[in-house]
Length: 158
Ligand code: 4NP
View 1 (cartoon, rainbow, N blue to C red):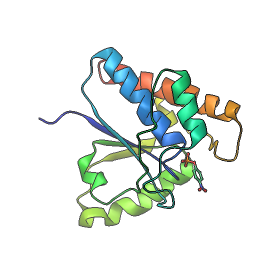
View 2 (view 1 turned 90 degrees about the horizontal axis):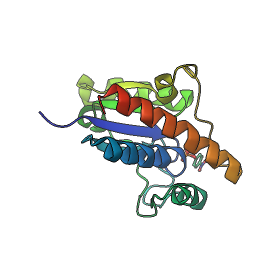
View 3 (view 1 turned 120 degrees about the vertical axis):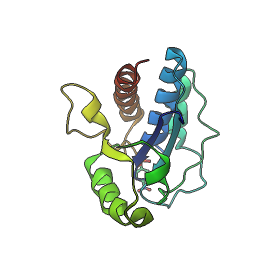
View 4 (view 1 turned 45 degrees about the vertical axis):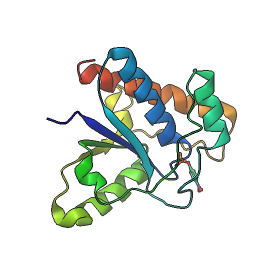
């Protein structure tokens, strides 16, 4: 059986979902859990670009180098390649659910849900988009995605 696979999806794939990817990679390594992890954006404007410099700086503050990550747009095959797809906010979730039924002519197998539903007390809430914000907003993004990553690893038996 192939190992569990997780895809994080935000709008641009340069701020929130790369940080979620980094947080889960770190938590999975710490827990000795083998996972396939990736991130993507519902939009393709930043495809091929590295993460936002403030996201790179926030990850670096936690000892993680994400400067080699490159943005990409969600693809139809993602709904079959990944077991779980987590949306960073409600609009991302709506967009994913709109894409999913037509992806692969209905052969989508991924479970699609809101990331913060993993965190008790935060169900139904967004990881706020920090793109137009400050360094503090990126720190809040990190705090949210790390908590969700910890919950996910615990749920997966890590
Ligand atoms: P992200 O943030 O979805 O967390 O990567 C954004 C990045 C870019 C844009 C919006 C949000 N944008 O409008 O280009």
